[in-house]
Length: 588
Image (cartoon, rainbow, N blue to C red; front, top):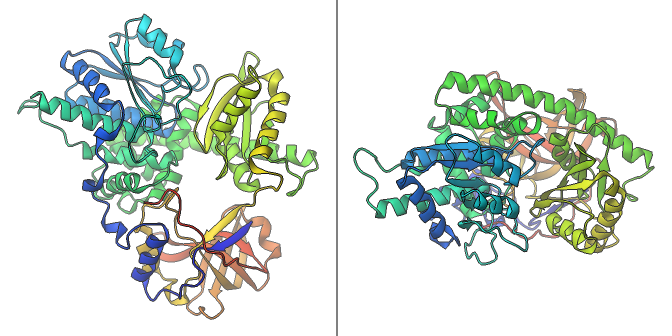
């Protein structure tokens, strides 16, 4: 791992406000970025290709009281988008709206012909299918819907293939002909924009009246914020507005009962919610339904207006998430054993890791791939058995390697090797015949090597520099906590500097807790608690001092708040590169 500072020549900031101004500037935003995230700054919906046609078809279905079916995906983006589709259409006056989430295990991803067949057997039979977070690859499914007389409107944000489905309308910012400036909308964000376009069309038709009031769609931004953060899309300015506005509603107590319950079962106070809480607390619990059971449970949690029912469902989701953690730990241990059996070390690893073990759970392979990617800084595909001689894989990539395009390149080079696949730059899914695994592994490793070159990539942490001891305070930690939203493309502040190590202990078997005091010219101040998650193995290597890369956070224990360092990297004999880092590509 390599540590690099964004701007090594800047003097230490004088106070928290100067620090925030510097952080925003380094990310390509105005110094007052946290105050400028109002709804007036959202990009207009009419820049999205296909949205006029989509709004026309959806509005026509509403006016005809036609049954509408929302077909979503089994992850948090799909669940929040499905809930938003149902709630938003009802608020606009739709008479009959239902949803269907395909099973990860029985149906696989997207609008396939079997999913359309199942939809056609529902009562009432839908006249319009609205896809959420899927559909752009559903060529066969849309064709089958046409044969059954069911119209399809697609909303998606995944990369289109060479052939687009013959849907009534397609709204996807990644369409080649789409001029929408932000290509990073999550699936739930695309649905939000479509609802705004439908509302505008209905307004022009005189649809709204005293008996049917026009809804304020901003009331659904809590769902948009959760799905956007959980899907780890780039937080460009437009997405930051969506997330910040949703967080403000959550903190103000104006959010869905289900979101409040998802935070509550984890002991988090919605009034202090941040994007990190959505990413690491609410999102994983919602995702657990799709990974281990039925995402319909997650959608119901988001749809219900009853706080007691929301809390009961959130408790079930929390239990599923605990089970997922146990499965994940077992699979990760098996994966590490596979790599150890190959007698590989950090320099001899293949450029891409393609792993499979009998019994691996399909619903957890994506998390496993992400964990291994973080540990080894390689693109990783982890496969689980899908039955009938098939494997289903989840791919996670590193910056600079577009994993969906790479799988497509393997497919073009060796037709028939890969079954279905889809995704985007950092994550993708695919299926293979079990017998094709060895051939695919060789082709995948070769393709990664061609893309990245012979030298293996090195994980790099980009630091915002040192913090003076005088700023390692609760007040600074609180200011940074609510200065976001931070996330992909607008990274949470990371600092580095030398510290005296006053004490250490292992907690929870895998985590390292230190008591430290700032050292060096910017040192001083009181001792601080620090926690390194998953860093227990480094305990014996730490002496009386260490160079830490860390986030400054707030520790809230039994109602008492104090500053805490979240350690990302420890170096007992550090050398910090002074090359400035470029502003994030996703910054605004």
